[in-house]
Length: 294
Image (cartoon, rainbow, N blue to C red):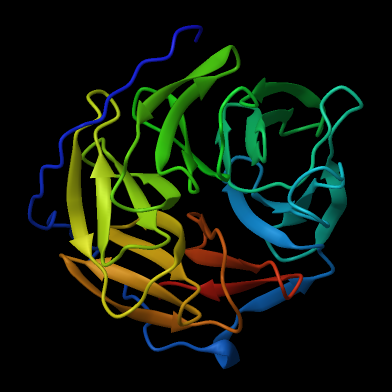
């Protein structure tokens, strides 16, 4: 992508999107730290988790020091039952130092990881560093989370500058700017739009059309702020919030506290094979796992 384009889509506020959950299973509500399925510690500032259903493993991206300039970042590989297979499974190179891993996404055999000045991409099988999408020409705030749309186009949030970019291995372009929130997490919705978790300026979670840049309200969160991770799973939007150290769930337009966690949660992941949520804490150097449905 050589030429950037700008879509500062007009704000079109809509009602809630009706979503349905699987009637064959039940959400396990009212959980807390005593209900953790298992925990994994030994990380260095784990900021995000991504589950890979094909390999049945979790990838955990870690700051390991400062968020820029120290080349200490890494991605760990963790089995689905909580064993650290390799702590520093993915690292940077001399040409493309990896400072502080944030949000991740997987396309095919490639794991994409946000860093302070661009996007690293790795072979998910071997851990080999494949390349880097350089954003350093931009006045970046904080590149944060990654998601693909239904066509496979990748997008990354810049929380600090209220922007969302589209990118691939060749480059990037600006999708939308001047957002009414500081967008943190990003995830694909069943209607083809991308949902954005509000770091500040709640209480709305917005959705953006990746083709047109049109912005709408997806739903209103209840009683919290500083949302980080966001995932859509089995008819529900699940978000992590650092303000009250919890996960929230939004079903049929109604948002409520779902799981009280043991620290300030960052970018969550869903194990879709086992209906398990992985919750990392940068300050606690660990990842907790809860069962979502029974």
